Structure formats: C-alpha cells, structure tokens
Image (cartoon, rainbow, N blue to C red; front, side, top):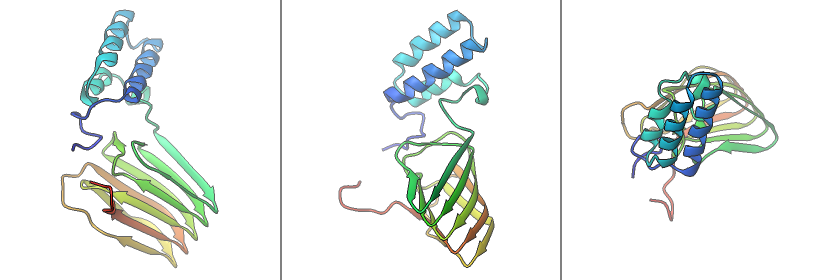
Length: 187
C-alpha cells in the first residue's frame, strides 16, 4: 500500500475537483490561456493518479495554487477536543491555541505538500497528540515548557518526508508523538 502523498496513488474525485478549481483561478488571474485551460481541465478530469494531477499545476506559483492548500491553518478551542485526520492537507504553518482540551493531528493518511510544517503552539492545561508515520520527524527544541511533559515514541527509520517544528509555549500540559496504534481491523 502506498502513502497518500505518493505520486502513484490513485486520484479521488475530490483531488480532481481541487485541481480544476486551481486551474480556473489561474486562468482568471491570466496565468493560463483559454486553450491551456481547456487542455488542463480535460487532463485533470481524466487523471488517474495524484502525480498526473500535480504536473498540471507544477508551473503555477504555490500561492496561486496548490490544490486547495492553506498556507496557515488555525485551530482554536477551549475545553473540548478537536483534530485533523484522514486525508487532511498539511499546511506550511499551523497555529494552535488550546486550553483545557486535546488537539490530535493524525499524519498517517495526511496529504503532505511541503517538506516542513511549523506549529506555533499556545497550550494551557491540555494535550497535543501527533500520530506519525515513517518519514515524519518532530522537533520540539524551540518549545518553552512549564510543568509539562513531552513524550515521543519513534517510528521506523525512513527518508524524511515532513519535518514538523513546534515552537511556542505549553503550560500544565503534554505533547505526545507516537505512531498509529495497531488494532483490530487495521492492516
């Protein structure tokens, strides 16, 4: 089984729709002619893999486009739990403001579009959990901790796909970095 970020992975309808939207915006900005737009739309709608889709936007600036990618994602919550899982698109930067709750970021099936993720963290009396896969490295050296704990369970060695840098402050809380748990019904 291939990782979701791999170019050989089969494209979904949602993947095609995101690329179509990027192409339409690029044409509206004058980056593509009508002929180029028509050719790329046809190619996007018939693409079989994520790699075929990526080629269609590779000459467009990232700000105009990656397929629906956010440069900065914000998570703010008080007294509850929230998270990102399944095929969520990992941004370049993530701002987390959390008090009395838990934030879980599950990278096992995430769509990784950049080689790094900077997390600016302000965590009070709660937890940040990162569920990783091989190739994801987490760096917490820039984090200020007050009455807090950082627990990290390493995953198997692999070429680095994503480097996660966590900075900011955590008070009366914990950060847990671990691989997905193996359980019944999971491969």
